[in-house]
Image 1 (tube, one colour):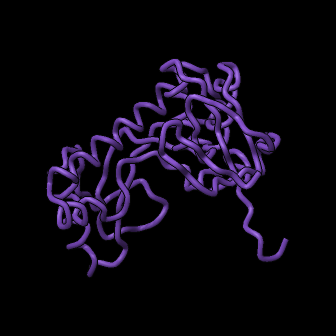
Image 2: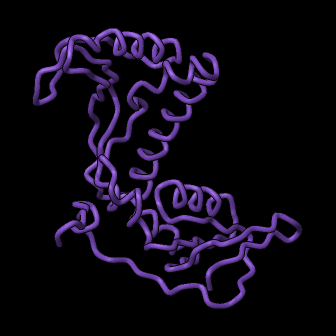
Length: 216
């Protein structure tokens, strides 16, 4: 369809649809959003013994998480020098540790649940093609190293094009994000999690009890 972006991840996986929430519901934990952050949160809560419901307005794993680059990496552009500049080295180190923990969690779920999602270990790069940008890449390598990541500044990569220089971080990953997320959905359903599509959260009262208002 002209003007409509298609996602390989969405188009190559079966549709998983759920009914909208149309009545009041009492639940221990309500997770708003059925992407990678929401489904990961829901599964961790379920494993902690909680009864969980997931609300999604556009379809489980069909939003941002269904249109990603499919990289699972602790490198994202020039984020470490930006974090260090604005919030200090401790914040940058916390960000790095959080990303590495998230990567380990993905690998753990894939292994524990036997999810067939084409997970592969790869090196990841933050790079520049123009030599005039080399200083920014070098600064990112230095900032990422100070944040605790085992990065290396290199001129040669296995990328399918020439670069002037790059920050290289090994033992990162790529996968089929929607296959992965549908594997989480299967596990959540086995544990009794409730899913509701076409259900937009419109308000929140964080009293006792907490109340989430929805479009339904």
